[in-house]
Length: 281
Image (cartoon, rainbow, N blue to C red):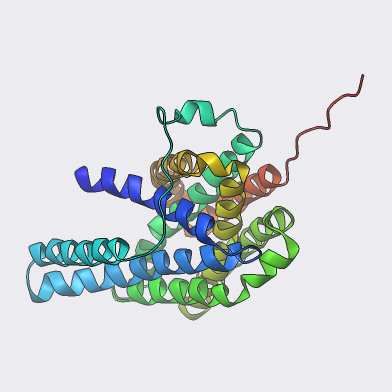
């Protein structure tokens, strides 16, 4: 629980800091590096922690995390980046909900993350139970996703040139198409691995533009805004895994991917929403 609280504080701070230190015109590339690091840590962390637990002990995993945390703390303490502190009480997350444009983006985040965790949560079981692949196939799927996600970092400059607002709906529509492709390829292991790699690439763009738009809403309240984003993300983890479970057990993995595609249409609609122009007297 304490580690979860710490992660819940650290992730919004990391995203907000990345947006704050990014050179003008290179926000997407800077945030993309952070997102790629997060994905690499997820893919490598899950795989290596399982190996470490088998070879040494499960407590060795927590010891390794503690060492890595100490290294991160030491690296942060040696940076020359200044930390701007604000006087007065910290803004309430509920007050941040009044920021124009934040609610549609949080809706997009909810749909985006629910679709991801709903599909990813049952991907491993599908590979093992339905396709008859060994448990090690889960690691291959994670590597394919991470490879696609990381490769997309080389294309982040496109977002800076076109603009996150314009890219977001198309990025989410691309993810929707990928989910349909995953559903069609769900009976073939090689094809589904290829689709998972493309899934990682498309999700990189979707997550990048989401973070860019959220951090640009109100630079003075980036931390609070990204805290809301993290809360919505972890709520989507719960919604995705619990709601897609009955779908998966009753209708199969392909239907889960189709439902995820529908959710991405919701995300695309929310991401393209613009407030109506003010009525002139």
